[in-house]
Image (cartoon, rainbow, N blue to C red):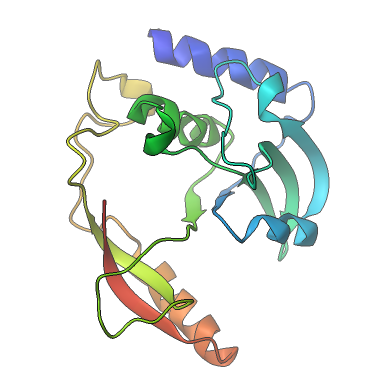
Amino acid sequence: MGELINKINETLDVIHKYTKDVYPVGIILGTGLGALVKEIKGDYEIDYAKLPHFPLSTVESHHGKLIFGELGGKKVVAMQGRFHFYEGYTMQQITYPVRVMKFLGVETLLVSNACGGMNPLFTRGDVMIMDDHINLLGDNPLIGKNEDELGPRFPDMSEPYNKELIKLAEEVALENKIKVQRGVYVA
């Protein structure tokens, strides 16, 4: 077993003191959406500081908690606060919680954030559904020793964002009269 898997198991040991349930949906709440946790019918919440190997957010508005519960009839684990490259964390540290979520049973991951845009047709406050991304950072979480338990060395990127989930998100937005854009995220 590799070093990263050992660290993940240490984190899971603490989480399993609270819950051993499977959580098929993971949610990473970005700036402005932290209040969504009020809608999660909570089982447990754990401060990041109690979780071995979890980074700590330096962004004041990010509460730094893992929330376990139910939302819309689905078991979810939500990150209330996330980590950023500009905070000085490595890509491996930033993606560590996602790797932990994999071992909690997460198969669908929903991520939100606040960002600037380059498309002149977008306006402040628009919701954009990503259908692809371009990484110009010069770093990525695949660098380093591959651990097969986490997945293939080079994941298939022919459809990085699930087309069925994108379609569903657009349908729900339309039903609720929420204007959404489609776009490519560039970092």
